[in-house]
Length: 253
Image 1: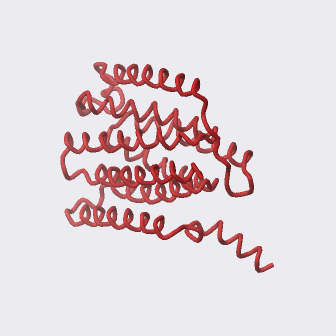
Image 2: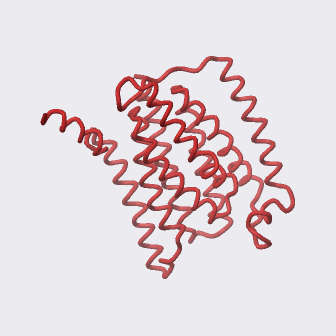
Image 3: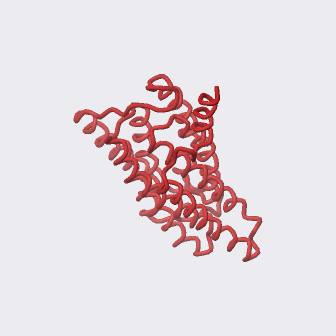
């Protein structure tokens, strides 16, 4: 009986089966974002809701990503909470592609992934990865490029930003729209890869994380260095980039 309880707790308490590197990654990320949060409060802007949500969503997301690198189905429980928060931060910063991605696509997609992974699990807690075919890669690349170009054109249309954010909507440059569109479309591709348990989903994730860093750096450049919620998103993206590289290695085993 004690042995059963011990196994049960090892899966519920997520960090029980983490190695030292994974724990350090979470702690360093949490420390840096906490420092940014404290700085935000010290400047008299403690009421900026975007920063608080970014801080919480960032921690939830890192937990989710590390669990995903370990092929754990429970990653989606944490992921659902994280993407709801990230969607709020993206909406507050008027990154249209990002908040559409998080709220309209990622939330239901995580639920679908949870169901599919549970159905294909090798036990109650984890899955066995598969590999993609070359013709599926060709289709994914062609479709991704086409939809990215289309969405960049849509975001650049006169009145598109005003439609969502009113007459005072910021005028982001072309590079911001490219990053935003790339993240949106490639995240959909990565999600489909995740549903199928493809190992290659981590390579797509690496590209997305690089685009996320570029997007939020561009937003900081255009909105000001004191945009702490955007800085937290950059820290989160860098941590996810490290985790995705680790996941690509881990899923090869």
